[in-house]
Length: 191
Image (tube, rainbow, N blue to C red; front, top):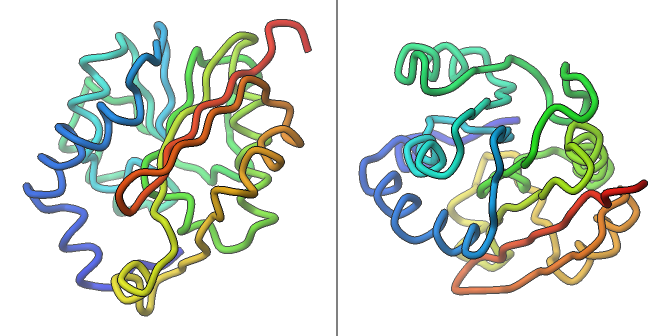
């Protein structure tokens, strides 16, 4: 996974942190109960940590980039349990979390097959009845421009329901908004 310089600057900015805390996270998690234990896939610079800590008593973050993982540990200390690892092969036990979330990071997963592996792993680490929720950007020329030199494999929202169903999820809801889409899906209580 790569991110260009400007993308890194934007993702660690106070403006992005404010935007995600006041707009993105509330929109994605409207009417979603995270439960007692939540995993954020790809927390990056930690823009979502504060709003997620308000919604769940126990928050973990799975980060593939060792430098970002170290930065998260230093910045959030006891508020976030940072786990080094790849979301396509999570170093986590089955059924560990009540919820799994990801915000604007799916397009950084290098291939659709690896994205599908991530969906299957999210399903595996969720407890039965758990929720998988998140967001990602909609593919358009501005989105592509912001990602020049990045790993950028947009997820077409019209294909996501089938992909999540294949991973084992049910009760799938996908909505598009301005420049992004949100998704919610559940691991069945009895699967």
